[in-house]
Image (cartoon, rainbow, N blue to C red; front, side, top):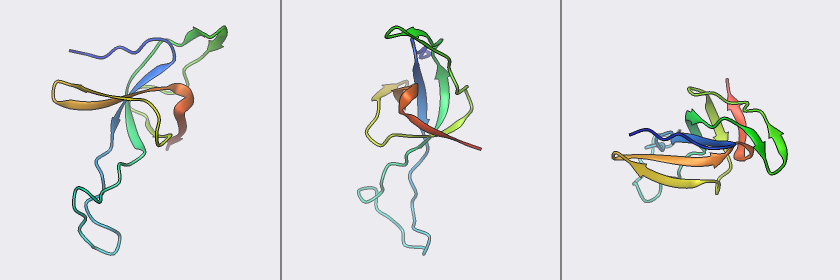
Length: 94
């Protein structure tokens, strides 16, 4: 089963959380903060959204940084995804 976003929506797969700090301290799963970095899995067609023409600036495979509290979490085929609006994506990591 595939997710196909509509409008200006983007499906993201979140990067795995850091398991140890830069100094080498191993973190428990409760203390791990969810990363705000993700990979773009699918992109909606854009088009007219709320009376404005939206062109999609991201494409599948891009690494992006997104807003901390943005989107909806979805679980599909034992995989977790986040569906966000393109405006919730802050930057593309190059």
